[in-house]
Image 1 (cartoon, one colour):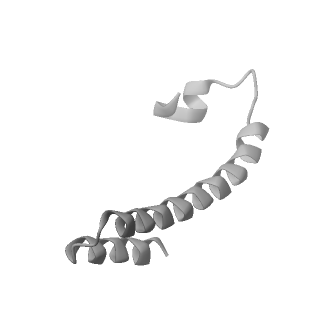
Image 2: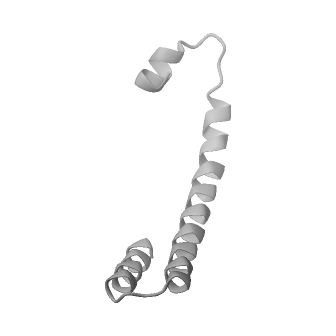
Length: 66
């Protein structure tokens, strides 16, 4: 879906679409990405919450993210 929306945005830009049309394309991309990241967040929250262990070494669990 995102590939399709980005392709449509590129075609609009190449054809000289006006500002309003470009913004509509960007709004569509924003909506898909927001939905995707909301889904990912819901999936990850449970995993992250269950991994909270005070005795655990953060560096060992998260590596360079710690």
